Length: 199
Image 1 (cartoon, rainbow, N blue to C red):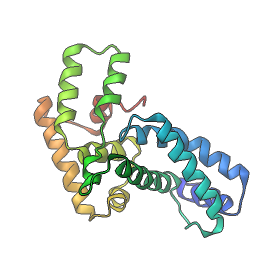
Image 2 (cartoon, rainbow, N blue to C red; image 1 turned 30 degrees about the horizontal axis):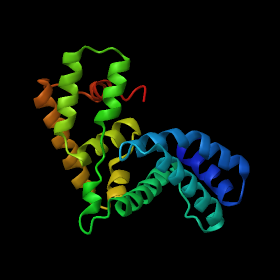
Image 3 (cartoon, rainbow, N blue to C red; image 1 turned 45 degrees about the horizontal axis):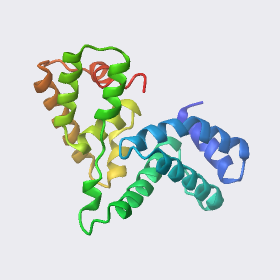
Image 4 (tube, one colour; image 1 turned 120 degrees about the vertical axis):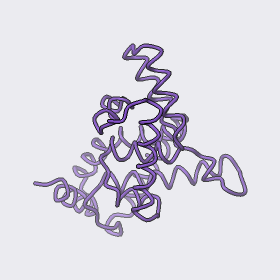
């Protein structure tokens, strides 16, 4: 059974009120949702509240929920929208508040690197390279390499053209290559470099 078919089956059961399906969805997606939200805010209580609130809304919606063959994408998109709306209210900015709430990959990467006792010079070089990327570039890399999200879904998440996402990724990879002095930056190297394997 492919992941898409599995997700369709589980989601349909969830929409019909199956508590078993709810448990599967919650157990398989809570941690990735929490880690993704941590890139926007370090307020763990807020994140927990937003995830709980989202699941309550989903349960209440039941059959009214749209069908999906990718539960993780559906949940990450819903959480992202919910979280950004809440954070916008919190910062109370009149304009461009969404732009002020930035995805930040560095803190969690730095923590992971320290835990793995990577040398200070390597840590500084990687952290510096990541910090030079825009918040959106960091988020695209995270979604593409950690969640293996296709460009079409990332574009849907941002409500932009697929080519815009591809351009963001291309510029990010080019910048990482320049900053790290490696012309052969591969997908595997990016995963290792960002230390996403053990997130």
